[in-house]
Image 1 (cartoon, rainbow, N blue to C red):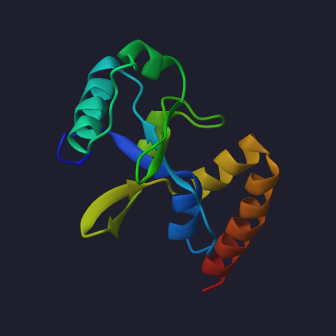
Image 2: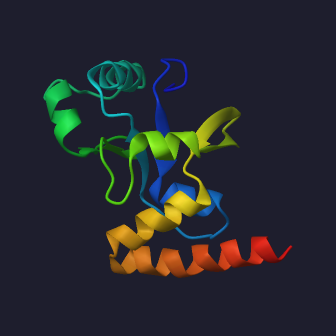
Length: 141
């Protein structure tokens, strides 16, 4: 749906960790969006089309902080900013993966490693260890 609305976004977080080869669980999908008014408006249009109620959420709010969308089939976190990353840099190094029959932009392995280092939470450090091992193994081939 985001692609249909021409949203500039990259999947990050646990779903990206899984896509890069470390099998683990996640409760949500994290989406890093280009932080500008036009892109947020496109994001909101796509989310509304998917049934999300954004009545109490403003574009300005979405530009200022992470939105946690709960109470839906899929918990969704919309990030206008990510510690340790600039959207344009991440966008330029993105990879595309087929996800439910659609080409979806995902954060590159290197950028995901940088994000996990910057976040530094226990879950991120566990992911980081596995992602670094995946990177090491892929460079040995």
